[in-house]
Image 1 (spheres, rainbow, N blue to C red):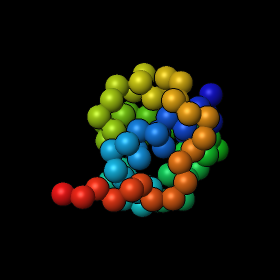
Image 2: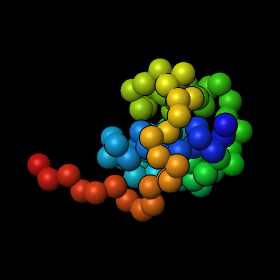
Image 3: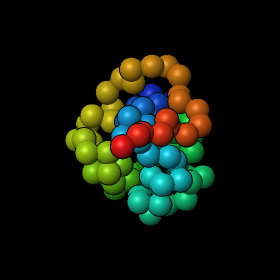
Image 4: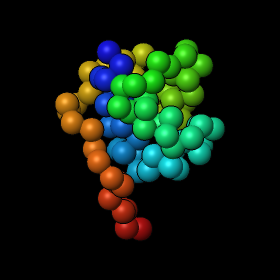
Length: 82
C-alpha cells in the first residue's frame, strides 16, 4: 500500500509540475522525506496525508487510488513553456 501511495503522490506531483525539492519546501519537510514518501518507505501520519492532499488539490482518499503506472517518474518534470 505504501508503494502505491508513493507512486500516486509522485504521479500527481509531476502532473502539477513540481520537483521534489519545490514540493517538499511547500509541504514543510525535507526533500529526503519526500523521496521516502514516493519510494514507499515513509509511514505517513494522517496529518501528512492531509498536507499532501491539500498541496496536490485532491481529497485524501484520492491518494489511496491505484497509480496510473507502476513506475515512478525519475528526475525533474518537463519544463512548461509559457
